[in-house]
Image (cartoon, rainbow, N blue to C red; front, side, top):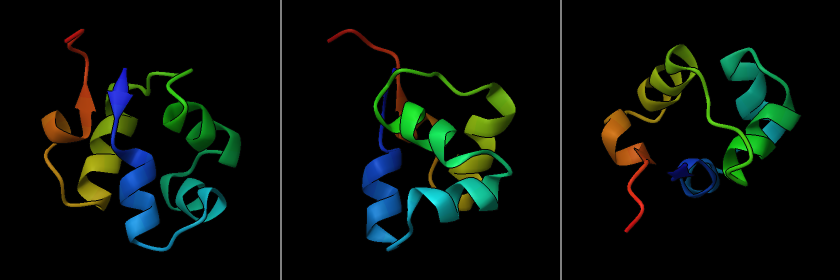
Length: 65
């Protein structure tokens, strides 16, 4: 699933470790989401969207266009 996590994290000058700590997950989980190897659970996706004050629909895209 395509996502904007890396871009948003970079814009906030956060490391993967810092974002992981804020979300209660590991740095490896953030890396897997950013590289699209892992689709986050709904609660984690919502938490990320809230953290970045971005609608979850804009943050994650499951279309195959």
